[in-house]
Length: 183
Image (tube, rainbow, N blue to C red):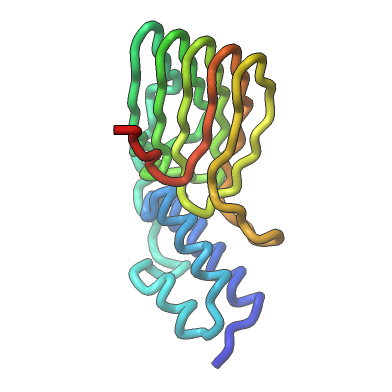
């Protein structure tokens, strides 16, 4: 039997609740949300949430809170893979160095992550889950700000990454997969 739009929205809400409870990572939320919107049949929708408890089930304890909210590199490089719960804005600073932050394994209860990224003679790379909506603001002075992530079809409620990015003689890039190496 074919699935309705209301059934798809109910499954997306179920996924959001599972993410709040710490049952899904940011990447899993994005991936399953995309699958829910693409589902044509009820069976395909049921497969998206088959391994999750029902909506009335007792809630799980949330993922541990991310204690570090600032990531900076001065004359060096920093690589961080965030696996904790994000419930506040993250700050990234690269001065004559590079910072790489991977958000794919993060727990994001609200479905939205906010970052402030500044690159001064350095580079910042933020890796987001495939299918996440990226909202990039800020400015670049003799540098670049760019999003190299897939576009999400309009009207779908996908996880959101909001980034205020300021690049001064540096680059800030947002990608949805690990950037390939030059070597």
